[in-house]
Image 1: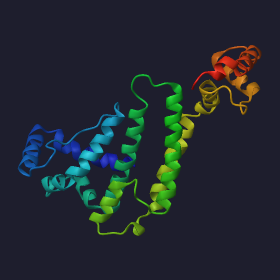
Image 2 (image 1 turned 120 degrees about the vertical axis):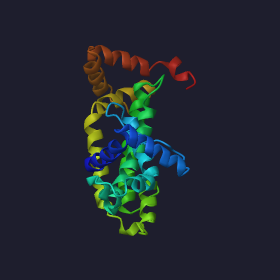
Image 3 (image 1 turned 135 degrees about the horizontal axis):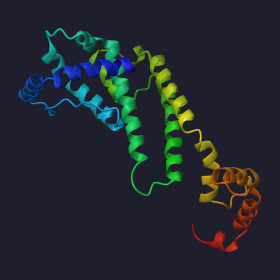
Image 4 (image 1 turned 90 degrees about the vertical axis):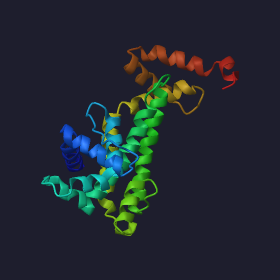
Length: 237
């Protein structure tokens, strides 16, 4: 999807980098009674700004095309390319989902248990998205659905394999980036509810000892005592 962002940035910069062009574009949007009167730019430092940039660009696309009509901007032709527009719609949809996760991981009182749960839920969501794309079910891809409608195409004509591959790439990236969670999840599960008979105390003690640099043998005794504590078991959850 890098080509999509490259085109978007060149188009946006051609408007915003020159003060006169920017003022003229703002006046054009005001004359057209648009809800938005400015084209956002994104910064690589702030991932959330990229999602806002993509959504704003799609909303203002008809006005951008009209404003740049007749210019010599090489990227202008891409704005009428149906495949490129579908790629833009997909990128807008998937970035919005990533932004939702990003916000969910932020804020006060977020524990490692909350974060593991959020990331695991998103990985499951990615698998579900792949399955839906293979069936060409676009319920979670509203921008793709609206772009197909603008192009007068049925969802059955969508090259879903192209976007399934992208979602699979994101899933693989998540597995690599959050591989430490595989070690932490059993520990977090034990900390949330230590009384389950399914816990492998030996393996858990080894994991906790490795993470926190503690003696696994001593941990085993502590964990077994915790599991056998009648008073703790009797306390309401």
